[in-house]
Image (cartoon, rainbow, N blue to C red; front, side, top):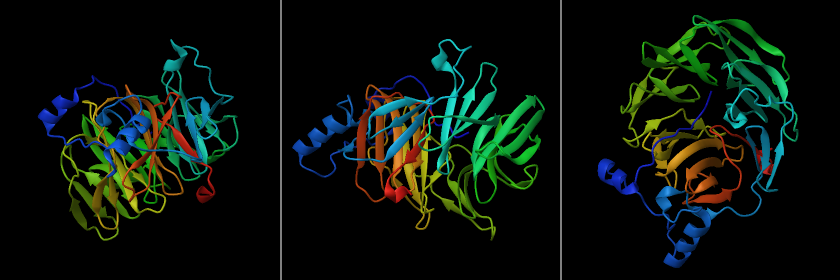
Length: 367
């Protein structure tokens, strides 16, 4: 599952600067001081400190964005929230809001995983324009091409992997799989996962036709770009970019030495890989790798040094990177950014966000 969220003790920004040498830049955007001050008040939420909030120009006009958050569909432009029918009611959890819910876009649809009190996940599909959840199976969900992979743990040493279409049809019959591997995403190379044996972590890519076959085992995988795999041998080490066709590997310098990189999100055209960096010291950062020039760009207004409660990043088909954060004291924030733009477009939301949110786009450019 692709979950990006964490909790921790809030650290004072001054302490972070002294201890880790972070350079935090106020988001003036290259405009006159008065205009910059207006933007900070309007688009940086309740915080007057730009380092504790996403900053940028106010996100105005239609966005075309619809969010699947827990059991609700949020239409950003209509400023509406509607309940999805057919999901478990959360009984057995105290309070019911503590029930774990995972959501992610799969193609033009969305997949929702709902955990029960025993730790078992039930998975549902939701189609655009619908408020009805369609049950598709049980297991820890991983988004796939045209469906979703389900990994279910029967016992300590017995795990099963299957793939179902979003209409509930079986695409890959349940078969034994390595319980030490948890899966992240389906790619053109295969199913990407993480193996943990006696506390040691490695990245794996398994065959889509026979998931019991490991095609590649490398460092922790941070992204797949066509036939290339970006991976990292260990925390703090530089990235390596492996060409799986030629076997050649080159070093890609780590853009920042603070924070743990997550699994990157590849833009629809395959040009950019957005990688979140998170830290238990509550620094949230996003770096984007140009996969052709192999150069890094830090997303404007990051890093953020606030109490980060939930984060989601996702590309939409028109090429915008969508960033969703819940911060204290700034609240719930939606930001969009297109590579090359000097600043974010930011809007404050009145709706609570989870650690994993599915993002739909309804503009003509997204069709």
